[in-house]
Image (cartoon, rainbow, N blue to C red; front, side, top):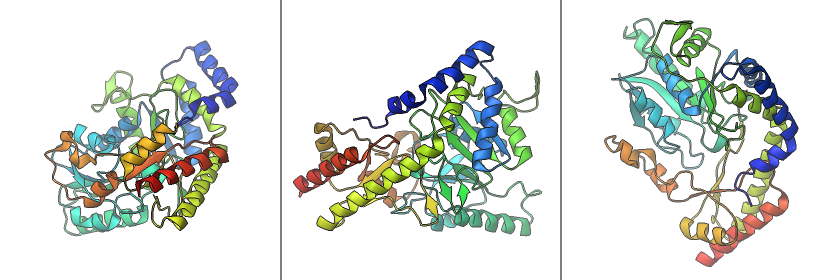
Length: 385
């Protein structure tokens, strides 16, 4: 059994991927070829925003989003400690300081009710992460931003509005999800995503994108991804080499043709997983906790992650029965050695990190697979009692 079955997907669309790659090999525009601009328009239309800027990785999309807002040394960015390190890493790489706010116990996203108390005069951004594909509560997060922006304008500290708090949507795991009838990557000033191969929409290497309706912001990011060039050999800002390869764009274009169908398949699989775990909980109350998806959200389920007691024992049991698993994430970022100087009080994150277990999740799982997985989980839990 595969944790993520990229081979099944490739078999389905191999001819289209081969055709797309061959087109790139024929025109030889391996950097910023026509597929780049076709993909950007396709993705912008899918999300429902004016601008998509493809970049070299999801991490680069975060770095450039911060750089485009002139966030750097002396600034603070509020984020979550319960995610992959790239979110906080990007903040540190631009010289700013990550400020960790704990998560909600059931959605695993940043707790919007705790953000305001973490804001200081140095706060320049809120970087919210959509964990496992489930969107954070952006209306509440944007309300915090709007409140402090209005307050700073009222006391004259904004220098024309530059000190307002920007909200960055880290949608590395949620491309294809929906929040209150709006697509992920369109929920704040700027959305950032990743096309790492394991993502619901992934390339065959690194890749990412930024999304925005702000034309000036989009132009800054286009410059940043290309060494800060405004025109060839005219550099208006310090940038980096952050361009997506044309071959990656070609592959993602081929995958976009079936992506809506895969979204539906992932949703069906997640519902069936949840039904089976509800059955287990009817026999063993509260044995399995699944991620809460609010009624106004649909999740792409980048991971299907449960919370259980005796996680490591259960994981070994599944491994013995040929079922691959992963832990996303075993150590919160504020407990990582790289962030040992950052002080944070995030007990929910620490507790959840000891209990989460991600199960196989992809669009090509079938009912028999899920029946087998959930039965083995139930047997493991029963053995631990």
